[in-house]
Length: 409
Image (cartoon, helix red, strand yellow):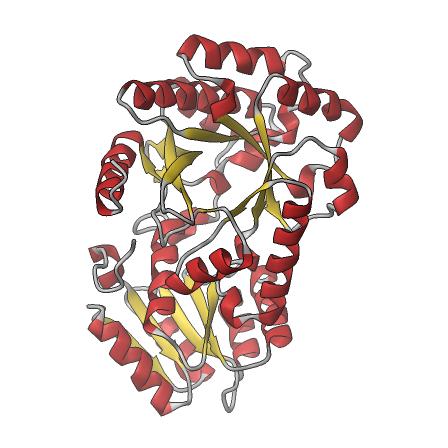
């Protein structure tokens, strides 16, 4: 599992500004960051000072750790000015305000188009701060934060598909009670010729809107089956989870196509889980229900992804043949210190257990998260605390080290 003191150089090289009128908090966070090896640190005691520093900086501050309650210009006003300057780095809140207020601020940051990473509640902890820094490195394209937001054009997506520049990464899914690696989720990345490695946020929605999602899904599915077969021959029988867009569910032949691809690769369909996002389930239900049901009849497992963020009810879940429920990271990461998030997490687990589903917690990024999801009854976990998504060859090396560590060779 991740060691807080063993950080990549990309984290240590971050340019970070701390904005807070509390001298003790400034010194405390600065000491943690320096202990982690971060050296490019700037202080600001209020919003005016911070904006002046940003306006006059030769190099953009990549990350801001900002308090809300400050004299002269509070954090809310500061964020408005920050958005007006089209700031494209990351933002971490640092506050002891009540959770309902913080949720409103988080929504405001997203409405401003700012890259919100999380809230460092006072008193801050080293482990939690590390998890936020690692998340920034994971979601922000290397050396170029603006590209996180800029989406690819349909032409670019087609060119990258044709050029073989889409690659499938794999993020481990680990069973809680014995720490056994049960499988992995397939997550596509794009090796853009000029912008580097791009995450799905840069191209999935465009692919759905432009009719390219079928080509992308089939590419990911074929590669996932090929990789699962290779791992199987190497003695690693793993479950593979593949995301399926609801826009894929208008082809009546899809169950046969998926089953044929798996069979030709030598993969038992019982090893394959198809993940579908909860918030999209209410769309085109009449046209997609037949396909969802026939996929289950073929033997595929079905997972409802990002549970808790959409509109599902126990009745709706009870009507659909899902076998797995994935609790969204919003109700996992930091839930040990957030009573509202913990309540939703516990209710989600209870719902899934009632319906006989496998419970998977996403966004497990700290030891605190791990112990909480274990305590409330989740079965498996995903998240940076276990491992990030990685290329296939790196995944297998990681798994062998993990198995050796936990004597599960």
